[in-house]
Image (cartoon, rainbow, N blue to C red):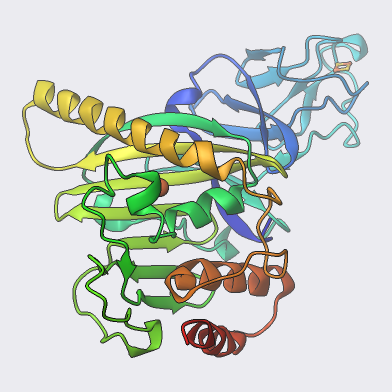
Length: 341
Ligand code: FES
Ligand SMILES: [Fe+2]
């Protein structure tokens, strides 16, 4: 995982009031619950007393109550009650549950992976503001891959006429010009897709593509959200929630802003979700066969110029993990141009 980032890890609708929920995210067992003000809390799913799971417990007075000996922990993780010590008895500070910094925004729950900070020092939530007032429907899929492979898949534009030959890749546009790709170091990767029928002319190299002044077709925001702009008022969004080194939960949303008529909104969401589910299943079948399950630079994959967005993702990901400088991006461009000769 890239440290010191807000990860989209859950859909808000998964956490109903009054009940704790157990999940595995970011290589940890977590319990997620809402306090008396419906604010979301994410804790490690371990009671500091005798280390059983907290998630089978209850929400009592806005705290989570362990079901073993009834200790209660508030949203900061502080122990508010040890029943065996009496209502006014000792609640030593050592009985502190591990809490993850958490946000709820855009109908998603975000979990901070990294060193905790002063409240004012956290970066903003990475999201696509232009979608904030769209309607949407969500589907959830579990993939047996590291989240890096599922992200790469959505930045891979040469697979469309093969994996999606009967759906979004219809028409056999196998030749990939560019793609023109813009990287904002540490933040985003934007991709403009220019796939064509193969007329016998060579593909245009990424470095020879003219710059664009239209919005990108694809945009990825680190660490784990992606947006495919299909039309000005229709978009597909995905959050790739890391579970562990070999598993990812993908939340795909069909966003639209085409009607104010509620039943029609509902229908558009359902149709969009249905078709996105079919397309995602086409991807899943092949991506789960990729080895290794976790993608990195120098693990055996070889790249072509059309893979530029993937290479940029891997380089930028490695740079963020290692805290190194962005200069290597130019070297990667050079290597991709060589591959096209
Ligand atoms: S193990 Fe949780 S209260 Fe004892
Ligand atoms: Fe795909």
